[in-house]
Image (cartoon, rainbow, N blue to C red; front, side):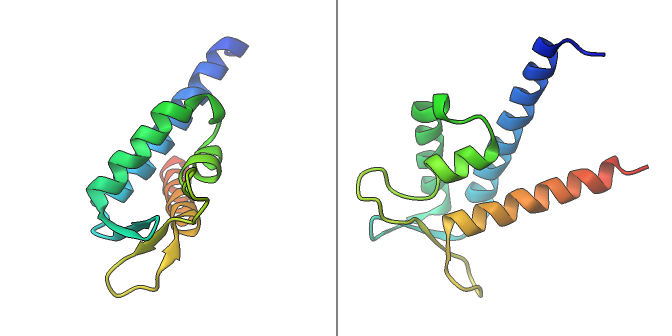
Length: 114
């Protein structure tokens, strides 16, 4: 049985991997991100999320924390981030990122199945 310290380290590694996966999804999405009323290409949005993660990592203990506390709205204006993808309705970053997180976890569960 792994030690509690080792289990915690594995959990932190999993959280970091999930967050990095979400940022990669943003970067590779080809979507437009609306932040404080201004449109940004996906790579710019990903860089902004990386910056927020670097600055706010102490508040993040799960991928859900990352989404809820750092990747959902502007800390400056409180305005929700929006995501416009080609041929899809505009979503809040909250909804879009939770969908991506759910897909990731579903994919991992399928690959882990016997």
